[in-house]
Length: 187
Image (cartoon, rainbow, N blue to C red; front, side):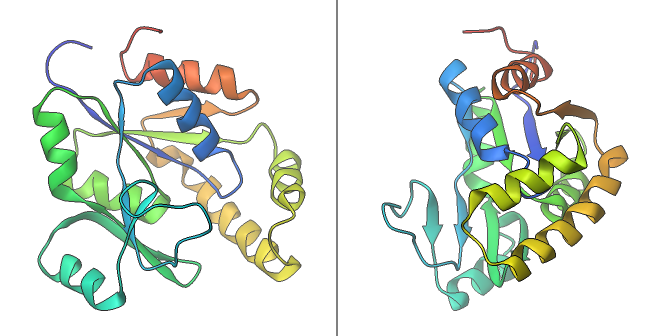
């Protein structure tokens, strides 16, 4: 891509492999900046404030929303998540490609406020494979998986709202496709 860096949003249903694909993208292209979201969720073991997330309380999150400091925000699984606007703008202004890994509601907010952003939908190779991935995690009870699958059907129906679709049949191929869509050369 020539000219200024572009904001790329990667979204797709829970369990499709967004985090894994972005991790591989960053291995291939460490110059791509992955936005760090703010969340009201409690840190998991091994997570560090400012690295995986900015961990904030509900009052601070409400202030960020009220003062327009978030590019997008959403409630997911009982917690709030949002993308700090200033950090994204600073990296783009410096010519650094930026990727956001967010859910559908957030992607729609980015589309509304930054129509020049590129929205990429990460799709599973099949519904059956998505179910297998979610169940195979073994990290959530059956009722949570059922809710995630119900939400996934809605998210899959929104694929046409995106600029491009990458099917995650292979992490390596999906990451390479994302690099190409971002207009970047390989490693």
